Image (tube, rainbow, N blue to C red; front, side, top):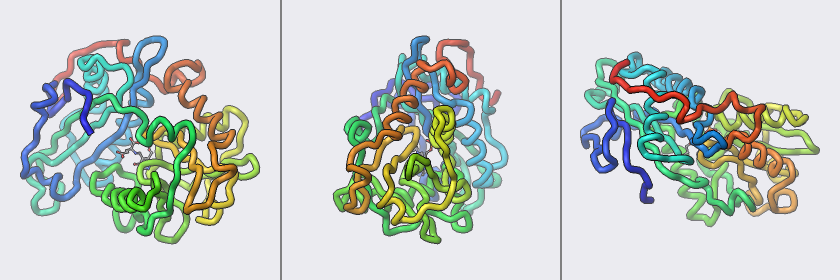
Length: 316
Ligand code: PPE
């Protein structure tokens, strides 16, 4: 994958793409103690806007707290401003934004105390994660042979770099088996989420999604629940079994990178008529319009990039 990006924000400064380097002996590279977020900016009638930026940065801080970080070197306000300024410097409209916290010094005793914590933010042009065809036609998924994480093993609510080994195992297996994505069951055997998305099921016009406790609580999930309520659907958070997926009228996944994508097939069983179902199509359309500032009702979710421009100071 090559990145369409000219600048990153690294350790408090904007740096050219080629200069955004960290040392080999960065303990987070060895132990997976990075914390990250995935955020998108979209073109709107008023210039680019970032979708749910403050909510993403709140979750970023929660993830750091879950792993045990105590002092972060930058405030939420500084990070929000750095994300916006990074989009301006790159001249982007639609892009993906990836903040990452890492241990720059120390951490070799497997403890996050007495460490030098640093962070960077990358932004690059990234189309839909699962592909444009995925948005139109849906994708084929399998159930992973490994379980999703459990809070007693490694926390599910933190976007902690090491947690993604679980997703890498599942997704690699899935693609090698000829599918497009894997769905993971939690350790008790009920449906948890995709490798980088939350999951929804439609049965008799009612929308179901797994409860919050064992999943990464996606902001796209939260937005889709809000939109579904707004257009009159009932959304129930309840446990879903593997076979409920097979016989559902519709199944779809949601995430910042993936947006809203139908599952046309799971474990060689077609879902509904094997194309994107009507409720998924409706929610996908409204989501795409909401993130692009075309629906007044959702303007609360947007931070306009060119609204207020300020100078970023390290450590403020
Ligand atoms: N579950 C997981 C495991 C997950 O990684 C994501 C986001 C979600 C649910 C949905 O969360 P949200 O983006 O807030 O709706 N996955 C991010 C990273 C994907 C990647 O491969 O990297 C993302 O979509 O940005």
